[in-house]
Image (cartoon, rainbow, N blue to C red; front, side, top):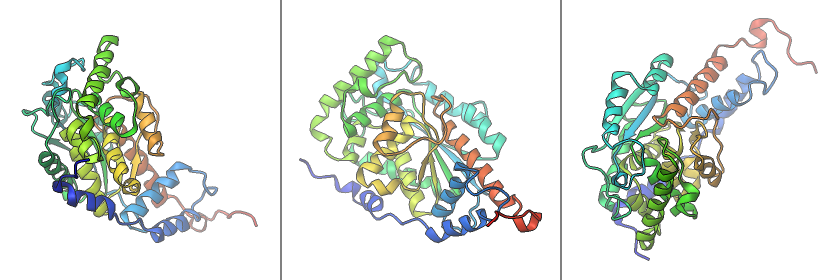
Length: 340
């Protein structure tokens, strides 16, 4: 097997040498939670969300003063295979829609006071058509991962990873098939709403890509370069940087989960600081989560992308933290505690 390109050495090191979470911060959260005017455990996953924030922010008093949704946008050469209901130019048009406040994610973020940042990744230069050539060379893949690390430069205290890219559910399916086995039909879904013929084209495109690149899929980062997209590379970089900067992460749907799958394949512990915001209606998303031993926080039948499911999970986290910080304690409310 060919050796892994040295361009990836620093990335692999960052994924392997990951900082641990803060158990003492979690203990402090639990101590306060036990004093709040409610039965122990009665807020269920909301209590777990506060512990999650504390553990990965390394703060006994976690905060959400600067939560952020990041959308990484990229274009894909595989759209030439008729795998999407929409043309490639829609990627750039939707980026403008995000910026102008017209998209669902724009409205979610505005309503709930969550910062929104959009990163355009060479939209004028689609990746290679994976049925005919590699999506990216190793140097460009590594450089795009490094670029994604800049997402934490604004010092968010929570980052939600989302994406936009016509054709990227086909790319996600190819990566998952390479990581976990199976055929295109096992991993493709309807994405932008393709009909049965479009679904068959997606499955065929994945199968042809897997056959073409079969000799070069020996490492998760090689899989990413041969079959991936710039937005998946950048989301991987953001995920890595967040871990080292003590920023918890919420992952969106199928495509964003694929970035986490690359990290998980290198070191399963490297995604411990990640929460999966929802399980998508894109059928293979639940299967991909199960391969990593994960479940989505929400199940709302979403398949929009854009970070929308992750943002809604962030709303739940904000609610959980607000309750933790502002509920009365038994002492302050003059409420009798649990009987002995």
